Image 1 (tube, protein in one colour):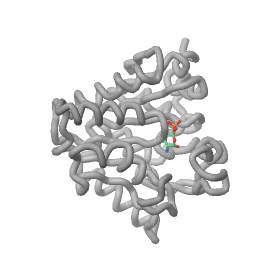
Image 2 (spheres, helix red, strand yellow):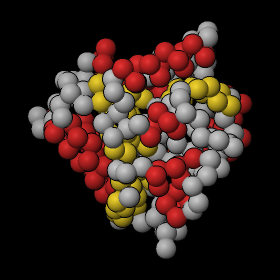
Image 3 (cartoon, rainbow, N blue to C red):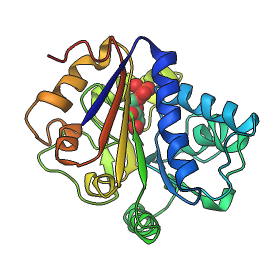
Image 4 (cartoon, rainbow, N blue to C red):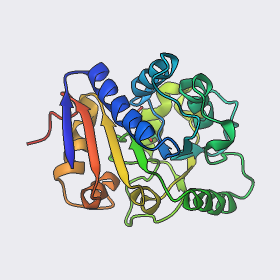
Length: 242
Ligand code: GLP
């Protein structure tokens, strides 16, 4: 693992954007695995800026997102499809047909998970997978459990995740209770992985990810077994590392 400590959120975002931009420049038709949550927003803003300056093009890029809430339409402002449109896709030249997010409205969730896994596999998995970290060490929506889920699947969100994400909804009752997420296996197929973490409330998750035992109780800890992981955090998020 390579770990970069940046002084604050802006510096973290800029370095993360540089890693993503380097991937796009070196392989314009790459597959980017993309993440939602508040942490990557600054990196997306920086990428949009570089695109607008003419320094970066996403015209050949294919994207696969990690996850989506069950029951939210793509037009719902808390859906992850809406997030991606609003924070990145609508502002750059990525082709809409080259963007992939699981459908939260599929009547048959299992069939949608199988379809989505096939899409990611057919693309050859991600060249670079961007990840945020849940406070409990979840990645995508792979919550702590007693095994590492292999493929895209339906999950019941933990109470701590529902509470953490309630800030984006009118109340905790409005947060969907389930999601579709790439599996740990899907994520680990990526050729390289970039984790972004910001703020003291991620320090424990970062510490367990990097220095704890590899256990499905901390899903991100499996990244210790991946050959090409970069973690970019701000000082607060990395403050728990020895
Ligand atoms: C959600 C997403 C994760 C994200 C996490 C942390 O649970 N499914 O992909 O990493 O939130 O979000 P934030 O960056 O807002 O702390």
